[in-house]
Length: 393
Image (tube, rainbow, N blue to C red; front, side, top):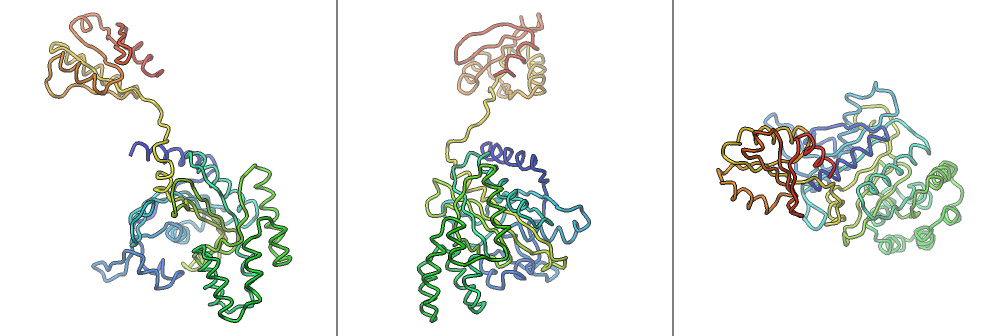
């Protein structure tokens, strides 16, 4: 938990420097909040229950919908753009595996009310900086829904959705096979060309110039100017229908098959919950996957472990010393087992970096004896000097 809290604190602090302030939503919401945009089929993936009032509720499977519901209910009068962040647990009824749990944590941001290349680019820059702040090695892949929608525009909506579903599962062969099976062989080759494109020039060579082209180029120019590393991937479809523009995903090392660690994009969702049609862009990070990806390579700031050891007549002074150490932010323990002085020293040797000895002489002089347990050196100092020395570690 100390490692998790350390990484969480770094990410919170970094999001705050971009102006994103934390919002918190209830653990459960009305079921309709999630089915209104995803259909009844999502119920099989959720924890759903009926409360004593007969209302259908669900444990939240993700945070974007609850945050936008909060915006519609409470935030419409706020000055736009609204910049919110969150860190909370979510619940999905699926088979647990490495990096995928039924209760899991998401860290994310939502930028609500801005509709520009700058807004799209900022959110991707925040994503990049948060993962780097956490220490994750990753690859960011960026696409745009207009790429695939332009290519598939003549297909019925249901067939477009099926192709996007295959792409969302990264099964490009199945997408091509589906087009061939439904008599659209003429789209199979362009689909493969688009999926293989890795530059904007290659993308537009397949689909032609589109109304969104200028904004897309501007977004990538901004990212390039700030040194953001990414790959263009037109096959990114994202599984949720409310995405409208840029989409992006990040993939981390050390996670095996379940290596996606972040997903996001531009979307419109507020109007489904009774609000105005509001442009938004955001992302969510799978925090548990961040921790799995980091493994044991988590740098933790060193805080010396200090034990106050005392003789029977020095107990009250030892308690006062321990209190003053803690008031200075120093981690400090003191014997609670009624051990003798020698037993206290032996026990402290198992875990303490430093021992502060308070005996009859220290009580009389008002000093404290500081012993470095690793090096075996000790010196008797005024307590303020002991605190200064420990705080400098």
